[in-house]
Amino acid sequence: MESKEIAGPGARLTGSRIRERRLAAGTRQADLARAVGISPAYLNLIEHNRRRIGGKLLVDLARALEVEPTQLSEGAQDALLAGLQAAGARHEQARPEQDKVEEFVGRFPGWAAVVTAQARRVDELERLVESLSDRLAHDPHLAASLHEVVTAVTAIRSAASILAEPDIDADWRARFVRNVSEESRRLSESAEGLVAWLDSGGDLAETPLSPVDELGAFVTEAGYRFPALEGARAGEAEIEALIRSVPGLTDAGAAGLARTMLYRYLDDVRAMPAGAFDASRAAAGGDPARIAAGFGVGLDAALRRIASRGGDEVGLVTCDGTGALILRKPVDGFALPRFGAGCGLWPLFQALSRPAQPVAALVEMPGRMPRRFLCRAVSVPVPGGGFGAPQVHEATMLIEPAPDDVSALGPVIAAGTSCRICSRDKCPARREPSLLGDR
Image (cartoon, rainbow, N blue to C red; front, side, top):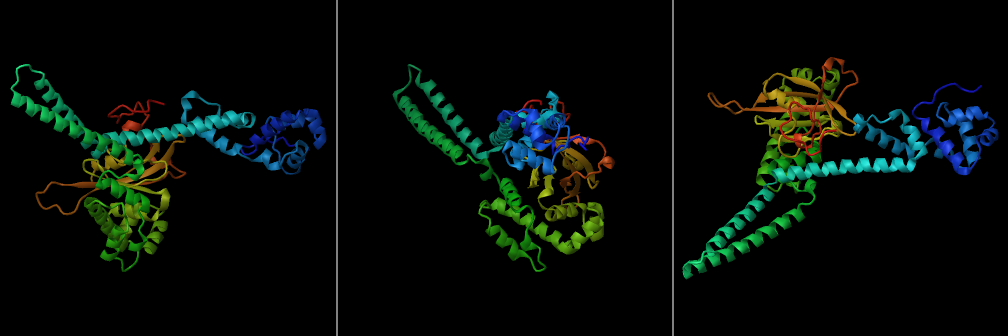
């Protein structure tokens, strides 16, 4: 008996492929149906993705069409399908017919490839815009070089305006001519240095621009996990060996920041050894507050330890009282800016206004396929301040994939990375226009 079951998402492309192959071969629907022993009406339902197909019938149809069965059931169209679905989700305001995407890929694979390639290229260009925007705003070498150029140009212009006067003493004229010559040489050298810097720093991802940026590159590369410090006897020698082993920590300031971070990491390991911590985390259901209480440590320490043991799916970011990011462990889908401030809607910054009070929120980050994360943060005083000294705080935020059940987490916060590269035009936290425009 012929099945009346509607095809699921995994099978919906198969009917379109069968139809395209039949038309390309110039075979009539009735002839193909007769060849495989089914009615033309049933084949018509299959070709319009209204009936499941598999097993012997798929093999018979593939043989009749002189193709491999996998060319009808699988193939490159699967990647195109995922690409088109992602592109459609990115432009929901255009209301793309997501329920027709499988048919579109099956009938027009060439156009589907074009759309997918364009969507991929848009992603690449947006990442480039983000990098260039950060660089123009925060690259200290670029700022210094431009300052040198402007200073030299201003000096030349001032000397030239004086030389334009008709009644100027010969000695003064010679002096200003010499000034023009010297400033011209300085301008040439500054311009050459600027061009050389831009050429050598073309790959922004490989060019740390500050000690904090070097620390960020170090943490990102290691994934905030340092096995050498997990041993019971780990100490100063292992920390210094780690710092020496990283060519990127060339700046003394960066090495100092890394040393401070690694000593804190070691303190967390000693307070929460890996085996005991993993068992506690499982028993606590991943709740940082329960983990911290079990080990008698601060909540910020528990957040850091979860990040160190959580693998690539767990991110971490810390900031000082000004909101400047200090430590960054990025996670796919939750981009962290290399320079400047992040999104003011992050729980990280909300925690600064509520010291010692945990903050948790479900955050949705923009993208081709918007992703949701459970972000938990806390702000604690920085040790070392004496009586009467200003209170200094540091906030820590753990970033984890959103759980399946989010009903108890409250409303979703539509956040971003930073205002310059965020397309959420109506955001109440926006402080400057976006380079990307509203989507």
